[in-house]
Length: 570
Image 1: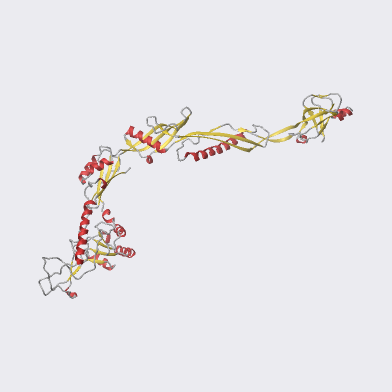
Image 2 (image 1 turned 120 degrees about the horizontal axis):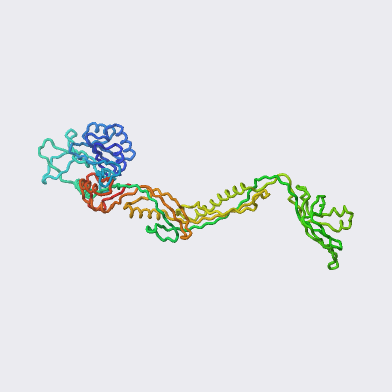
């Protein structure tokens, strides 16, 4: 037995609305009940579109309408047309009362906009179930009726020309063929069969179910828009891990302490250039193999193996040689030398040095027995341009390292905050840079070290929003929505004495009158259209209200709280 869905089409229903209901139903057979003039079925292409949907969904479609034009179009597209008269399947009406109001914000003394409508879509949109589906059998050849326990034995199967169509006032049956004996004025009716009883019980069940739905299916949805007022607040707030809970009295919220320290180091290239003439310098050890001490005055000349002349920087006395453990050991004394002239050619390797003055004086013994020797090269002799460290080099190095240091500290902070709000993540304390070479140092490269630290407190934005909401509630007697507020932070300062962070927050956005939803539900139970308009219009703080009643036959608020829903629209 297939299920049947009856769709009552109103005069102003759109074709798309009807198609959507048709698609949504699970019934295999759908009967469209139309007024004589219906906007949904005025055009031929609408019947063509319905035919395609019916094929796709494998549904059978019938039309019950008093309009010959609609019936002709239905037949053209191979839809079944049921006979109808003016009393059949009375068209469902959907009264709708709407009152539009000025959308601007109302003061408590102004009249609110209260809309009350019946929602037909709840009636139509529910797909047929096994309980409310209607079974429509194929046309039969007898009409079975109970009449005073009398029978007409002369009812017979007539020829086709003796059959008459009888119009049926009801959306759940098709036209039936009644067999009549034209030669006998007395009619006899057969006794009801099992099939007739089954149909009767099914119809009775549907009627009872419909009555129950009619009485209990009502529901109401009330949408209220509260009156709004703009906010413009500045609040000074403190946060610390010593604060255990949100405190309106202290304007404080809980926080978590973060103390991060980092150091970065990098080599940089010196860019300064200066003209220089520098003499090579180094140290040698002077040996004395004579039996007497040998004094040497400052500026004494020493000659390297490659014949470059150097001078002593100080006067020295080289002690005489002596016998130690049976072996002769010459006396020795170290002295600093400086090149006779500037230039890199005086950068000489380690090796022997002689005193040319002894040779010039003809003192051959002293020349041979008083001499010098270096164990390291004599270097730093230059002439021309040299690379040096400048102030610009050090400043650029500091800026580069500061950027790197800030990124490192912020990356470390990001791994620790775990979703907390941080408002001073760039307030990093940076130490003075430490360079291996000072300004004007003659070097091609130099190294700089930089250290920095960040001490801050992270907090939950939900705690801050709760504090703002408490403040607005107590001071303004209004309510707020966090996602509609704009918060800007200013005057962020770390407090070492309290080991926490203080800041100023500027709050802008709307606040709303507080609405007691449960009281409104209780007060509206059972009220009709006029009563609910009067009540909602008198509630302080309501800018506008919209009441939706469903199904379409419901004219008042249900008496069951579970059937009433109040929503706030901001």
